[in-house]
Length: 307
Ligand SMILES: [Zn+2]
Image (tube, rainbow, N blue to C red):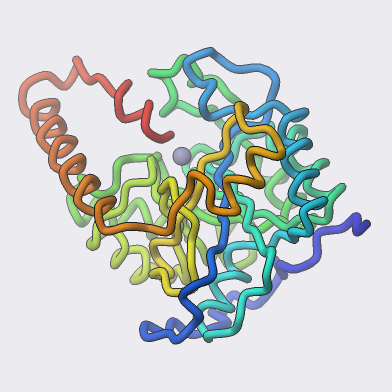
């Protein structure tokens, strides 16, 4: 069994190394599971439970993938194949982690290394070395974040580092200038810290409008990931790659069933309609918050959907 993480070349050139091709001709029947985790830890507030997987369960899930013949590649390696129309090998999975929490090192990395799995870690650039302030509504605003030196170690271990904004806002309801700044600056800050390219972006809370996606593309990223209860596929927009949330409740065999398509579907048009309506609701709420009661902000429902 491999014991090093091979596919991603984190010290690659800062120059973009593959083209964005808008018209692609990949096989459309294939599905690609892109898994989403946040914290891998035994310690968490009950309200944060949906976003936390214990190290023991995480190992069970990764072990099931390995025994099922899956191998993991980074999002940028996957995006590169998709961009140039290269086939994605069968039983290929991408494992991603949002936020850049410190527990990635102790909870996830040893397991990933054990199975030789690549992974992509999306970091809130403005919170490196601090705590997870945006999780206050879930009682988790003091979770330690990675330090700059931690990120360098992860890069050397073959983990891809992606960006997840500066302050974890709902980008799709920010004004264009503020959203642009969040996206653009996060890339610059992380590239400065890593001296390495940062090529992929994860939308905070999973929220991304057409405008948001365009801003991410314009900022120089080569791919971006969203959150849907859906498998990705080779014909998806490289700036809207679907991810599945993996929870503590999923056993290893449950996870295999999920990525074989039981319970998860390819992205559907109904999802877009629901997303548009939900964005309108959040936008109106934001107007109310900003206009009438800046101190009475309630984020619990938003955070219940995604963090
Ligand atoms: Zn997040």
